[in-house]
Length: 214
Image (cartoon, rainbow, N blue to C red; front, side):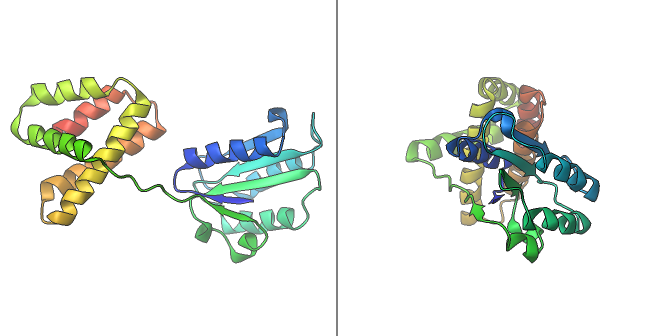
């Protein structure tokens, strides 16, 4: 199976549910998560794991999270694995987009594409975010630090807040594409969003730096 999604957390969550639906025991799920492009040495290790028998159930799963890509050499080696997988093994590859893989790899996988959900704002939310932008323009450092403090209480809530502010900013830029202040703030916001979502950064400090950059 080939799972494609821009958000690797979304892909991981989907895979967990997918394998649970196939009644595969957690002990029989081998997740391989890579912080750099998967190389041929990694694929050789995967080949060894694939040949192992399930510990508890009748079926096991090997999950390859390749969000930094897979080298061409490694893909050619992986192709041999996909051509003749053991009958008791499910192989799942997750990657941002299928175009990063060779056509021969794609043709041997069942593809599941997880679409990005379009974020929309209610009228009240749009008013709220407009008020925040206005206040960031008009008020001083004290307001910005207090705003960071108020938002930085829960990581999940921070992520949602940043996503909604990004939607609002994009809407404003469609109305006025020459607004460089909003454009630069959106770029800073996207960087902050990525850092908070993927690292253990101090969330309050990250938000303070974002708001002070406006």
